[in-house]
Length: 110
Image (cartoon, rainbow, N blue to C red; front, top):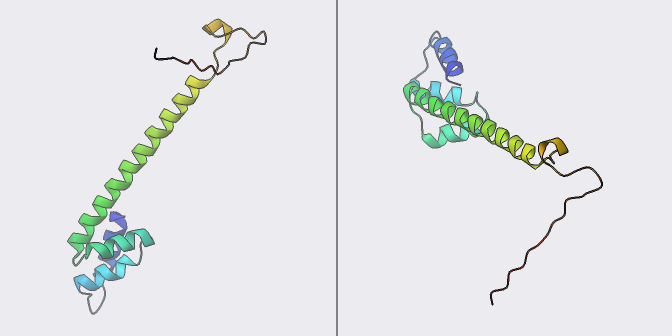
């Protein structure tokens, strides 16, 4: 996102007459997805420096979300592996028709 902004800001520098900072920021805001546009408008960005700092923060948030998703997927796959029944050679039950049963143990407080 930051690289994209820098690219188009440098291209806009060659325009005659040159754009003001505010016009450049508002024009480039429309190049991003609607969620980013809303966040940029809410941040009330006025200069390219503010826009670049904002896009850097957005990228770091997206990266941290990606890391979180990956770690959660890894944990879910580990949980799934734990729930798989063990074979007889790994200390699990034999395959002679034994089925795992859900049992409730009731404790009475006498």
